[in-house]
Image 1 (cartoon, rainbow, N blue to C red):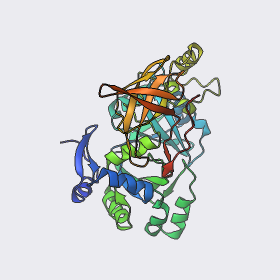
Image 2: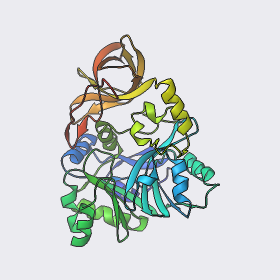
Image 3: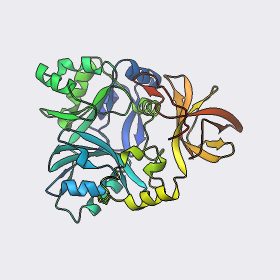
Image 4: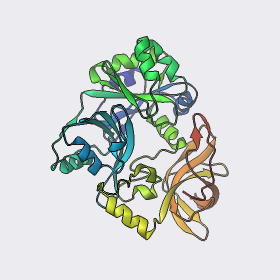
Length: 367
């Protein structure tokens, strides 16, 4: 038996197919992964993401600590704003990717991946020794994601008019506290929506209220195809401690300025830039029928070889799509090894889907 979120009984009542995910008993789907995918693209879907690790940081040195710990710069934040970043080791490898929220000058919140829970907490504690801060994992909280083009109108009845306005006025990557609910305009699907952190004791009731207004439960299966269509990396597949942000389409999450901010991994990234980055993460679209899969070989004629890191069938585009790590000089086409054959694919710049429609993909001449 794995760990269970506060919503486990809700999943059983909804007849979810339960699978192991990073040691957690989580819903893969509630009947149809395909229908759940389209539900989010066309209407509104509800995800239990309470397996994610929520960690609060307080104390006089918290800003200094996070500026050293993270590749992105928390000086860019004001209270109520969030930042996506990587946490690197000394070699520039990605320990985890995460979102950091600034709640006040001496209070920040990190949401990190569940599969990296133990090593993340150990790393956070190790790096904190030289700083006056307090680290607290918030196991008393649950987390839901509501995603889709009709989410905004459907949640209006669940809050007072004043609260609803506060929520609807949020800009992307901003958050607001409404009573016991910490509501952030973030997500992992490429759609409009919110991620909501709330007391675990209130999670089941709130879940039922969301379902009652027509926001339908969706499982991890749909979450994965949605994030892939949105061109969003998955830790452990598209990046890990063996690769850096510079070869994972995450250079934009690294703040090299100011030059005197000595974040962990900075020297290694500068050395990599100087030597020349050898690989990059790109999008692939299969030209014919078929499904692209993780670890399939990618061959770029006259350039070299790479590998698919995340591959699947896109329900929105009705095509095989993937993220792949390929030689940096890869241009706009490649071949993929599938069942003993080499099949052609286009190389594009993610995302594949933006707000429910095919994205205007630029050919991947430069990334």
